[in-house]
Image (cartoon, rainbow, N blue to C red; front, side, top):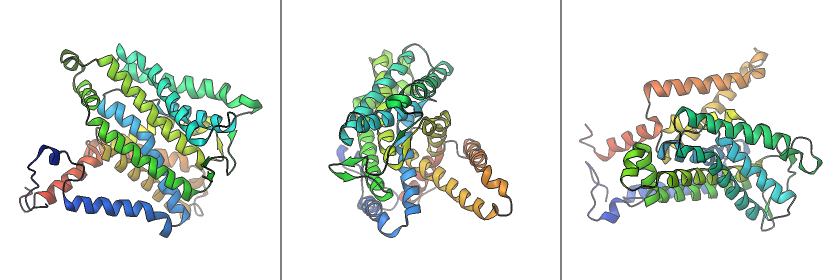
Length: 353
């Protein structure tokens, strides 16, 4: 039950319950209801923004796993998203596979490709790991996909995905609302799987490696095995993001998976809070909504200063960089930490001090 000045439990299971009070369960029920009914009362613009948020969450989950929970720095995560997207698209277009089967294949190959670039983590860390993951970006997207994969079937630069190409059991995923429900279901599934995985022996091993890999190895943790497992899991999550993103696109192109998106995802994790699943959600919502508000603010001014609309991309990147700097200065633990402090204030009332 919800009590002033705190919540207490009498069993071990209750302490580790997902939703520990009736109040929290009520909030989660309202959240589920909000997610299910959003397209009923929101216009297509709001739904499209929600789709971007969901895609960002799925993309940033793997980054959070590697950086926040396993201590492995990555700056090439967009490469594995590209693998998931391209394999899924090729499975549907060329191999005539059902979309779910092609998506699973894309996720597995993205995970294995991530493991390949995670192999150096057995011997290096820090700056050298950054360079390795950046190499994954350049090798995968700028070389293999751009010069070879994109030209499969006589194509010049991209794979066309006309409406109706992506179907699930004969149900075409060809609109923002349908993509929203697909992305919502997979986002909830991935968040739940990640939260449960972090409670297992695997999750505890990742956190031990993050905190001190030498001490973890001394305690019997197979550091190399669990690092590679983290890269595989992060690659699978990236593959899910890529498979979810292609129904929203009219074509798949290397321009959708540039290095800037990898850097963007690291910024999302920093703003939301490193080492927190809440941080992935809060960071994705904050970054997406702030930039959409900035776009809406620029539109009226573009009549007076036409250069603003032409240079909005640079303005957006400058705003994102400024947000990262301000968070590192004034809220280094991210939005998730602030959210936890707010919850503690109300849970401990009237003794919040």
